[in-house]
Image (cartoon, rainbow, N blue to C red; front, side):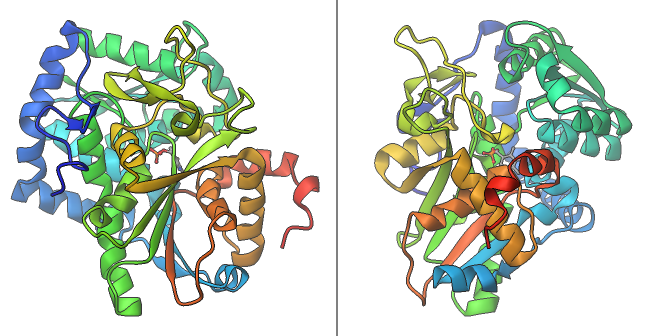
Length: 400
Ligand SMILES: *Cc1c(COP(=O)(O)O)cnc(C)c1O
């Protein structure tokens, strides 16, 4: 394991990571830090987790050679089809693992925060399956914007708790979840939905998502005779689908690792979520990382057309991969992502999530040769984004 890209026992990737938490949260976090690795590596967990991934989530997800897209870009473009996982994105890989972990820790209640509602739905789904009480905290503004996901969570039997403070969005929901956890440390596990937050969450979530790159190595070997591609491309909100897609290639020197972050209307427009290109070092949600802040250290409001990338920070692993140059990150604008979503829909008959469309748009920025193999992690399906696509239909009607 390269010490630069796997955390030390304090949760640091180089200078990034750690656990900067209020004292009242210490017992909860300490319990996780002490137990997560031994549970994740136990035979019982490995067996139960793999069985659920196969029978319930529908893994392995296909690695699909997108022929029409490949012809367009004059290279071999492979899509890792996380959009075909149960509930429509990679998020379920993490929630299945964390609910199992919570059971082993003797918890009977799960709490989670959600912005767009995708992580909330994945959490509510697995809680229904495993008979766990589930409370999802969600900003009141987000509940109105994402009403279909609120309905899904309620249908699955979860309680959706509105966060009514501040801007009534994701960060306020996170505050409410933390407050609840401090008051219920013994019977409750808090599922964070990305590779963010205090140690051990970034490592825990990366390990649970690493099934993505594990499958890529096996599938690519079967399909092409080589186990690593020339490049892996993934979108980055907090960074969990990218961490999962990169994981097994962090130890191979010759795979180009590429993240796509949300530039919003443009990196320098003030309407952006490009935490690496526009941000600076600081602490957010218990972790030292790169984030967007003003000169007084106040977190600035992010913007992206894609709700899943609309986050002012990024996981510490990605901050480290960025500063060391091990991975390259491209800022992709709202318009570039929209265009890429229309292109994939018309060329391949696959409607991608707006988040995943950011990764597809990277193909317009980098030239690959005809013999090369490029894997794009298609993190989710686009059904949830249909109203946004329809609002922009006229601008992209001729995309083919
Ligand atoms: C939530 C989400 C993302 C962003 O989260 P990461 O932790 O960066 O993976 C990307 N794609 C889809 C489909 C999502 O639902």
